[in-house]
Image (cartoon, rainbow, N blue to C red; front, side, top):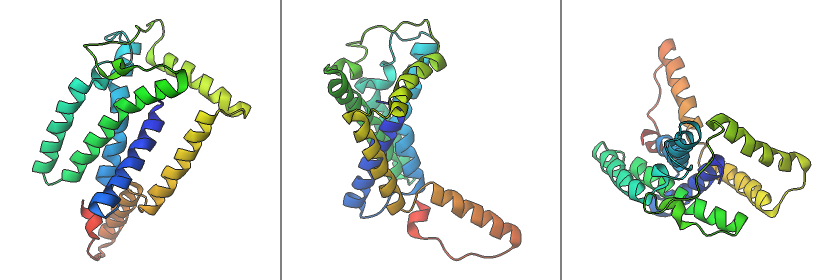
Amino acid sequence: MWPWEHAIVGYIVYSLFCHVIFRDSPGGLDAFTVVFASVLPDIIDKPLAWEYGVFDAGYALGHSIFFVVPLSIVVGVVARSVGRPRTGVAFGLGYLLHLPSDVVDAYVREDVFQPALMLWPLETVNPHDHGQGFVDQFLEFFTRYQHELLAGDLSTYVWIQLGLTAFAALIWLFDGAPVLRELLLGCKRLLFGLAGIEQSSERPSERR
């Protein structure tokens, strides 16, 4: 899956989780965290494989269930200890969703079932040719994707991507545009502070 697909899926699932479990919308910090965590495996593995040749393929340490579970537990414990339990939940949920999403994506698009994508180092995927750096490799893959969009001959898979994107945007707006909301509130506080104007108390959701 593309990084933004992971981010979209991560936010949708976390938002629905918040509404069902917490009866509330995501806060700015946990919304940012779930999006960041959902792309973190690619941030770790792709440059190390494509640019530096540390791993044979872009599915290694960052995609390994043996690394993800302990990391999520540690982040969850730390987040809870500092009074940010939702942030820990957001991190674990976003990160853990990435792994099966790649397996499902490979099966849907290529009809290949590859649980090895998340079982490094016990199992590994086919080695990657390191003749290209990270940026060049990304641009090559993205160009193929871009040509399909520009040609207007969209596959069912791309239509699903666009539908999920629109759905995620609607949910994000329904949630009050977290992250953007906090940025605007921060700018407002700064301007009011410079002007010496006192503000009313924050909503509870703004303090998460």
